[in-house]
Image (tube, rainbow, N blue to C red; front, top):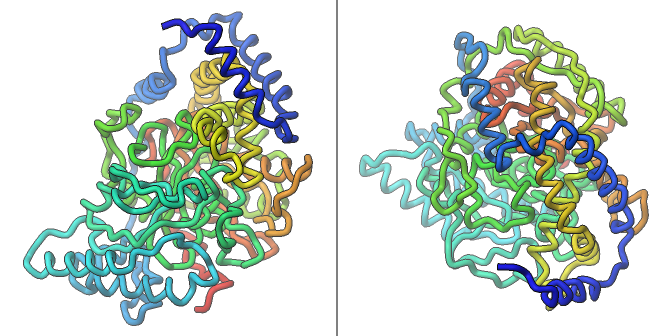
Length: 561
């Protein structure tokens, strides 16, 4: 059906009625200019005519060209001795997710033990951390007792049986309030439960409630004007990063063993890095988004933050896979991530980027990243210096165009009817999306497959995974990130996701792993970027790194021991 000129006129009038009082709109001509130049540069070779019909097809085409197999499977390494004593609530809470789940499976601990220990820490610490928006203590205890009764009668234990988790407050559970960190949805009770929560339930995980997040997942710093300040467990005066702020804080604070976040431009990996935990940004289409609040449907992915890489592997293996309720999920089979995680990484090629990812890098972050090189070389991996393709600067500029357009489209009815219920910062960020032409939005989406192919040829033609910093700077302070207008504030916010947002635009998987501390005592992390649907290889590399280091076992300095 053709859209009549009267409809277009009315839409333009409605958009023009939105106040244009935002410095962020001034950056759009720069972003649009980069997009126009990039599209025109690609057209002479008829790249767009040859591209697959959709970006999802491009991801699968790249996977198929690699044969869908891992490189250099190697031999199994010795299992990690690990382990933690199960006496006392804090000692129980200090276990990893896999250790806790395995303890329930063997009968060394009960689900009730785990949940009571987690609730005790929430009661003692969350008054200062503000990680939780909603705590469902009674429901969690009831589920734990049911799990124990089932185990007592000989019932099978799922891979996450009895494990306390909590999730960013944008995952819908039927009948439970899911506020999305907003005033607008403060009383919203969904009718259906998210597929990922259903799969966690089936695996035996116990949901403690909803976690703090940036309003509608729009902001990398973690600040939400509608909520108490969610704190960083290493320094209460530093940001926890966002938008999955509560997920990073709750896992690092040992309140829960793992938490789901979402990642549109870095919102799993940045909180994981700032809080000293692991986080996986899966391949686009790897995990269902049914029953999850949309921020930007072309860029959003769902995944876990957890204490260890193995923990992330177990949770992702539970939630990943095709979902009939989400047509964007991939039919690509989900491997047993833990089955290959102990394999040697000898002979694998790790790309070390020259250009883009190492630009404007803080010296303390650079030193921590460089120290990882010797660890991987000691494990037998080969480091491959790689020049990054120049188009990453364009990709970095195009990503916000897509996010702003789709965010504005999602929020247009509320912006018309309830504009005053948005915080000032989020309201202004959404406004910019109303002023991007539809042709530019379509071109920004069309350019993705071309960008993916160029990046993959440059990187994965020479290596198996690319190693880059997550945050290019030490974790900023609350004062540094206090909301204000002006270019300096915008530069800081944009800088937080410089190294992560390009991954979302390309649709690739990336794993965040803690690799040390900056001179100011804050954790910092690398990310491993892989081929589409090759999360298993990233887990293998990250786990073998954690076997050789103890950064992930350090106790947060702002918490009582």
